[in-house]
Figure (spheres, rainbow, N blue to C red):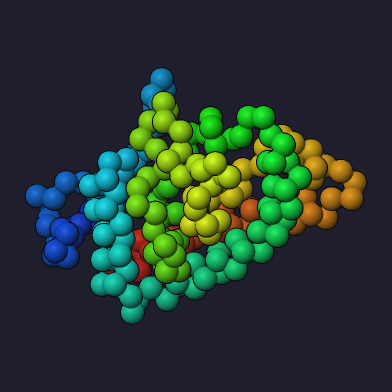
Amino acid sequence: MPTFFEMSDRLTYPTEKGNPSGSESNRVVQKIRLRKGHVEEPPWKHFASWREANHTVAFLIDRHGHHLHETKKVARNLYRKTVSLFPLLEELCRATCTYCPDPCCFSAYAWFDFKDLLFAHLNGLAIPPAQLMTDRKMVCRYLGVRGCTLERMSRPWICTWYLCPPQNGVLRMDAACEQKAFFHETAREIRGGRKEMETAFIYETGS
């Protein structure tokens, strides 16, 4: 089954007015490939392309809403599984982030991908006004003096599943064995579910 980026060449994207623009529209969902010696860059890193990408996702969901049964089902299940991780993540954050001399967000190179946007739109989440960053020289625009300014559920998945070495150290303690197993099993299910959601969306919008 092709990924969304591979399918993107076959999709017609809407303009800001909501009408399909065909081959005249700029490519909204950029096809991102990793090549040897090539550093991957954030998609939709400019405000205009970010707005257009989100407009496109919203348009397709609205247009095919009555057919997105499996897509919506998977997205709702992903929401529940993601929420189930938050108490543990809050606990880990209290135990480590407060005392961290070098917060991950200062050096992280991360962004919203298509699955993140699809998940957010399908679950009616607040859409941030811009991509996290435009290049490696930039610190995440949503990093505030007390940490991330985005709600946990509105952050990219990578910001949820990534655990720093001190947090992994906490989970390696004997008393946290069950929590460690729970986190890794739930994260594995979410990763698989995200792929399933994308695949279902491609199939149901193409039928």
